[in-house]
Image (cartoon, rainbow, N blue to C red; front, side):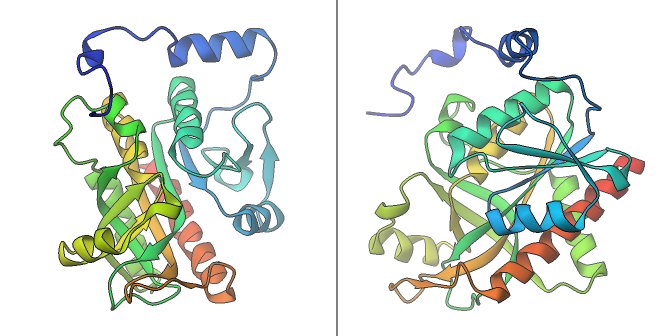
Length: 262
């Protein structure tokens, strides 16, 4: 059975819209009035979010997802959103809320498994497209054959920042899947041959929503575990992974801060 189950769902109106959701929770006092940033960085790793909160000058806003911090040194034009759960559904809801509130640009910063034998722990990868093997994107993009794509301009800007800062990176497609414990040998071998660089859980959904809503989204990953040899080699908690993730965050912050000024 295809996803979504009802093939003509895209022709019908949704019962609950982001506008209704935000309006209701604002009415109930859960979403306060606050300076709406132009750009938001999504992150998932608790150590990265904690480090950002410790080293940056931040103002926390409650009621917008898990944790939400305005970066005051950017004049509140850039914010960080984290602790939104693992995988596409939770962060997708936060993305919809932030778009409704008026945010225009996003960079997704996360860890990913390395599929290619050339991948190394701590490598930075700029995502160029996402294979849709999760559920959320199919409820946003009507044509199931259409790939989920990031913003070309914002992706190029992120790459330029990495080059300027001397941060080595590669680029390529990712495989987005909901089923962390069902990534199989056959799939990995197939995507290796297709030139797919990483596997993770959010990018395809975020790209699909951003495309439909007309906002910019780019994504970068740090290789935190390797599966290219068809065995799992995890280094998720390694210092090298943490440091690369923070450097990628810093590049995302600089990219968005500069883009906002243009």
